Length: 537
Image 1 (tube, rainbow, N blue to C red):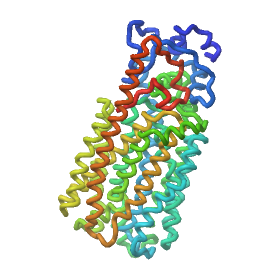
Image 2 (cartoon, helix red, strand yellow):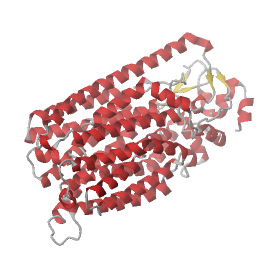
Image 3 (cartoon, rainbow, N blue to C red):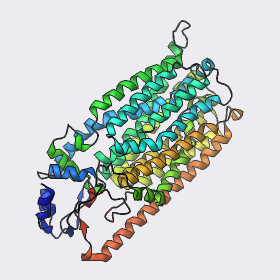
């Protein structure tokens, strides 16, 4: 149906013309119908025609092409569509996120398979090799965020994945400190695209009620990466490290294998993942229309390439941006316990280098089970932040055990800290659901990623050689930080709940005067501009 044809339809019938299944809605029903527990505006609310809007979301153009839902859209059809999307999108999304984690933390496996001795690292040099990855990520964050919005999303991601695979493979050829610094810097630069891109993918393909669980799934593969990485490094250390005739050292085998595998996955990503629902070959025109109907409740659309300075200003002045950024910054200061210094920390508890490679793996298993379990509960109960806090409490206990005990008790405490990443998945999911406006979303993502990189730059520096092997100052700081992160989550919930209540009160006060612009969901409005927007808690 063309734009002119839509405009020619009487106001009372416009939504029925685009979405025929809404004819079944009773005039006496509430002005919102539930689709997957998300509110979707129905015909009783007065509509005004969609005015021409510069820089509107790409979903508006796709809506004109598809004509909306062409058949009644029931629950069974929606489930089939979601399964189809999951089948084509989630596997490779998870594989790439698995690789971005294991590739950046492979330096930890190198630290106990001969890297420092072979390259002559002394003093704090290993700390800086670990940290410089995040300097690279920080330097490229602003450019890559803009490029993600400007170029086809999947194609740009594919290029970055392929290049970081090449860079990781090149680490196996490094002979000195300078070479390691250069490769790690560019590894961080190419990985800078992943977190913001994955947020965009999630918001494009899933509605609000589905997003938290999907983020939990792709983020939980970090736990899988920890397990696989530990077993893989142990195998390399045992079979390659003990062979005096091996052509390559153990750390070289790790970097070369992971790097070349990443290159293959990057190439596959180019051909298998569509840039958006509008270009998805695995969806028919009718299914694309149905998908647009599904994500109307997101109040966000699928993205606009138009850069809007006003949305940048809003991102900087919205208090929620800084609440998100504080959590990301603070929680990543202790991140080295699971990444660059995980094996060194476990070794300091009284275990050997080889034992540490295996003993870090249960942290990944705990993290994976907790992330999937809590995000599933969040999806079912629509209480993301409360379940997130529930995951933080054992982590605080674990941090205290690490700081006050040793050997077995300290190791158990180390595993319990695996609950903190539930906060990261929650923040990512809330950014996908609660930050609207394409430019605002990428700006908030950019600021968060800067907070993430700064936290991770600081992180290795908290583990000073003079504090080895216990690293007590670092452990005490972890206890304090985890408590502050939990408080921050509760403040977030209070702010978002207040906003929802205020908007409901304003709407009720307007009564019959309340008017909703037709297809307002696809006009690339921000969450503060769009008064129909409601925040997920």
